[in-house]
Length: 224
Length: 196
Image (cartoon, rainbow over all chains, first blue to last red; front, side):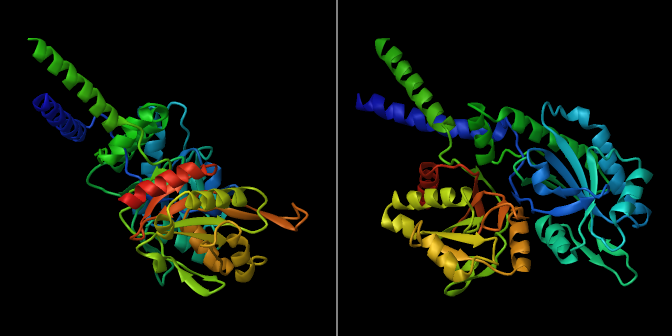
């Protein structure tokens, strides 16, 4: 009987190891990493309406950071946001809400009025896509620089040197994806793929299925 | 033949047990964060002088943002953490430090904070700072807060995000508890992490 017991224990251990490897290799469920908390903010949008991080709690949000008088290459950032917004149906969001927020780091020029004009000039759908800023430049630097890890610096000619990027935040206020703008490959494709993965998790990770999703986090089954 | 059947049944039972073990509900009740970088370090003021998050490297730190006049959410959460610590062994509890960061520096002096937090657990530390310091700390920990002047007999209330944050021994944000987490869930998660 001892021999059988020993075989059973070995079988158990083998099953655990095989299950772990199988989960890791085949990745039946993929998730996005929970990177860190998204910063809190309290800003004004293009309609002079207050927008805080609590207003978008429960929604997935894609953030980007720019300034409106940026020369033409910057417009690719707006175009990427627009492309993602227009192709959102590809992501099967179900009941999950999605918002887009562009934060301007130049409040001296980008008043809500200017942000409104900019939104109109690119024909942005402002029901879903907000353009915001805050007059408190120190806090703005904390939020964008330290919170979202998006680098920017003002030049003597009032232009900005910055690293164009996008940040995907889930409904719990946790950063789930950070994307540097790329010209070689489509940033929009990657972000849309990740929005889809996140929406799947939001819709399916409650109840008994939560266990499988937590296992995916545990085994770092991250979507490419 | 009979032996093989018995062995097969045993393997199936063990397989099911392994499956249950592997896919069972994770021990943690809060949301796990796999941050690749340490949490923002801050220095605020307690009754005994400056307190930095990095002072507590080697111990788990719970961070809660609130204020003394907070009518319900703050005392409920602090009471739950206090109860969780009391349900643990002394050595486990000593490995955990709660920092309550007051969002109301106008009224919550370090002296008043020390007196307030001691009601919940003798180890708790109350800290606060200038509005500028608090704006930076709250923002980077995802805590929104806003004063409502004239909305209470006490003068004003402060709406605030009520999450309870857990920082690990190396200063990385590890867990986020939503408001309403029970003392048992807090204790279970902390005991689990202390074993890691």
